[in-house]
Amino acid sequence: MKAHSFPRDPLILAPMAALTTSALRCLVRGFGGCDLYFTEMISAAALLQRGPYESFYINPEPEPEKLVYQLVGSDREKAASAAEFLDGLPGFGVDFNMGCSAPEIVRAGAGVAWMKNAENARRLAAALRSRLKNKTLSVKLRVGYEDNFDYLVSFCRGLAEEGADFITLHPRIKKEKFSRVARWDYITALKAELSIPLVGNGDIRSWQDYSLKKTRCGPDGIMIGRAAARAPWFFAFLRKKEEDPGCEMTVDLQAAAAEFLDLLPRFQPGDFLESRSKRFFSWFCQNLMFGHNLFVTINNSKGFDAVRKVVFDYFTKHPEARYKTEKN
Ligand SMILES: Cc1cc2nc3c(=O)[nH]c(=O)nc-3n(C[C@H](O)[C@H](O)[C@H](O)COP(=O)(O)O)c2cc1C
Image (cartoon, helix red, strand yellow):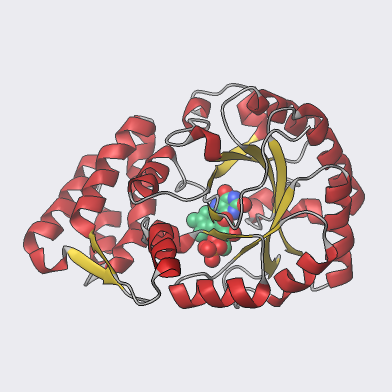
């Protein structure tokens, strides 16, 4: 049974480990939000053990009805039990990660490793579907181990036949990290073969990227990762541009940084604050003059309080860096 219907033309915050916490989602929300927010990947096995950090991973703030929990794991039964647990929480959907190509994840038989065997993936989708009564089921994947479009189509059709409500394609093969550009022609071609919505993801960094991919490739939704970590206002900017392509948006970077530093301790355990703040500023600093130098200083700081101090000192020393105007 499908509890929620797929939104029209959604803009979606991508799952990003150590980044897409409630804190980043709140920051995005403060600028106007997006249509669906994915959590970072959550280990199905750890979730079932109810470890000390799980409550932070599953915190649904700030817009629980738009939240998609992303599960990662290699064991079908554990994944299904974790999905059943998530089904009882607030939220829009449960996604399964079949795209992560980090070596430790693939070695464990998770992430993109699921794409090696379409029959196993299909059985997993059926098991997940059978436990989800109140949430959508979706899968996020890559093109696969190699460039084989026919295999990708039959793989995705299998998932759809077992009840997946939508699929997100990050069109790169396993061995491509971010080395070459995402193959958006795969989105166009795959969409034509599927009966369920297809979300396109990869390399949307500007208004031009967005409008071009949207009109040329016709995905049912667009998911954005790194650009939203750099610019949590990016979704708001795109919506504004859709109404008025000539518009610009001026953002108070100092206020955004301060807001994030306030939000993080509200939503993350003390021992995550340093690493999570560094992860965020590795992207956010790209907005700033001498941003790389600033990030090196942040990264060399010891402890969350030191990170905060470096950020505040930067804006005190560089008042001219406070505002940024997004144009393109
Ligand atoms: C720091 C980081 C962490 C990521 N973590 C996840 C994850 O937990 N689950 C997942 O499916 N993809 C993950 N991804 C991949 C993104 O969701 C997305 O597919 C990829 O970044 C391409 O989109 P983009 O070009 O808009 O960033 C991660 C990417 C980055 C940069």
